[in-house]
Image (cartoon, rainbow, N blue to C red; front, top):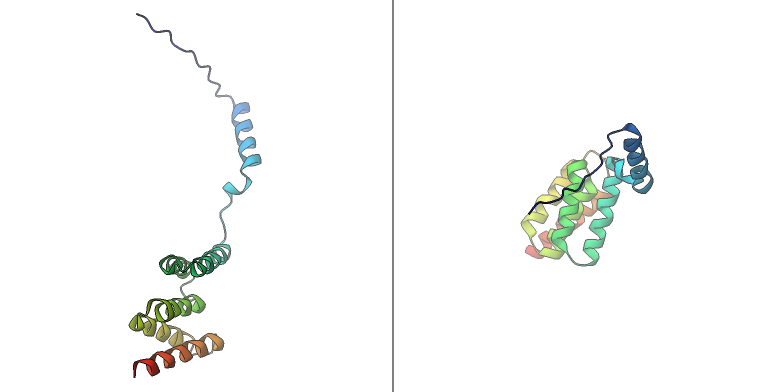
Length: 130
C-alpha cells in the first residue's frame, strides 16, 4: 500500500511575509505595544479594587505587590496592604509592619495624607490591642 503525499506549496517570498505582517497589525494592533509602567500601575490598581469588591484579598495583595514591583516607593499601595492585613485578614503584626513602613517613608513630608491615615490606623490597632 502506497501513501500519496500531499504537496504543500511554500512561498518564502517577501510579499507573503509583508502581507502576513500587515494582516497581524490590522487585526491585533495593540499586541505589539509594550505598556508603560504608569499604565500598568493604573491597570493593577483597577484590578486591586475589583478584587477588594469581590472580597478576594489574596488576589488584591497580588496586584498591590505588582504595583510595588514597578514602583517600590508607592506609599498608597503599601498603605492598602496594611489596611488589608488590618481590616480584612486580622493580621495585626503584618499591618503594623506595613503602617510603620508608610510612616517612615512619608515622614519627610512626601505625602502627608497617607502619613496621617497610617498613623490613625496604627493608633486604632494599638488601642484595640491594649
